[in-house]
Length: 604
Image (cartoon, rainbow, N blue to C red; front, side):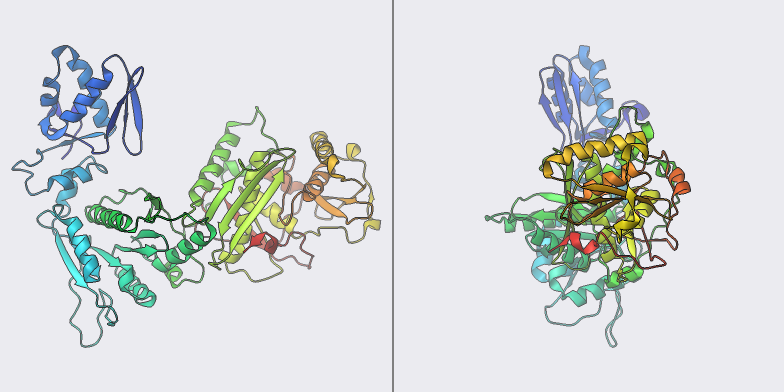
């Protein structure tokens, strides 16, 4: 078993990961691997660390490596070597590479496993008695076998199961009448399927059979300009049909990547990654590629990336889906964001912001969605903050969803652009067809409920004669009145002007309407008239999106003591919408004209 230098007292054989790099700096040395790095200061640090890494060849012991250096630097070298082991840049082996005790384990396999686990020897031992089953056309099987050459330890079986194009066959673990029984199956065996060897329906049947048997498997093939590997570990996850639809839709939405495709090289890279992942999964190293369930190799860029693939509505794989329960509102959900970032914002607000940004980053993937991009850097941020969000339409692979939002701050625009897209996605993704249902998304349950309520309210007053002239300063929270005046000044050069009217609604909201001379009226809503005026003004610079102003209350609990929440509120689920995101919908008791038609932000 691999151990640390502290545990062994300098026993064991040291092996540096193959991706360790060392470079000199003005102050010492930089040491890095594929996913982390650190620096060391001091004269001679670069040479010392370079020699240490070079000496960790899997055949030398810790003491051997230390003894090769000058005696006066050994205490420093010992400290540095312990740091390299602690950070998993170097692993300790029980047996030397190529030694008698480890002769059954191919050196390249030990080196490869060192990337993912501190205990390469134990990982290799777990391969004993397992099977890798390769299912595909003969040429593909030959390429995979070639890549496996020199990596298969004794005890690991590799079976080739050729597929003859045009011949109907039973799924791997099923049989047709008159066919011989399928080979025995045991926990830990791993299957690789070549997607191109099957029709779409055949591959779906093959995956369903494997899911039903709880068999981990990988599907490999080309979609558009990329080679893909898709893993399935739990029942119903890793559906190739879902991936194909999403990946093709993302390519349609992406700009042309140019000419000069490196198809052969990308295909080789894909097969190499397939072999690495098969061996890692069979050895029980499930997190070898993090939490991702797919890898892609681009034939233009030759870049390899990991992905998390969502499931498309309507696909048969969803019938086996086990949804994670949504937890109740946590403490951060009670907080209402400020419309402007302030230096006295609480640590809880900062944590909530970090959680939102992390969630959006996890949803955004230009190769497979569901969000393709969220951007504010390319848009002018004067006179208002602006952001743009774009996502795949989970129902129509030839369609997309986009929204541009302008509001009081760049950060708030970023949040609400994503929410507008999420609301459209949720209606498509949940199969919502009821035109009377209003859907709202938010970064707290309270915000989602508020946005659903706002969508149910008219976009213009039905009869301005029932409203009274509005004195903003006498009827608003002070900060909200200043916010509304700020927007009036900012937008004054756009010729926005007219008469303000106001009314209190029965649900506790304030309704403000701008009656423009010779133009249409525009409405806004809020917990006070300042918020309502601000929302109405923001409507004049936003087209087909809902942009709300955050209430001046401290918590959503305070807000809902003033405002009556919609009746019949229901949670709406999307496979990817985890984290702080909440989506709700309701059907109002009496019909109302929708002011913010969700279809308006859906673009082809």
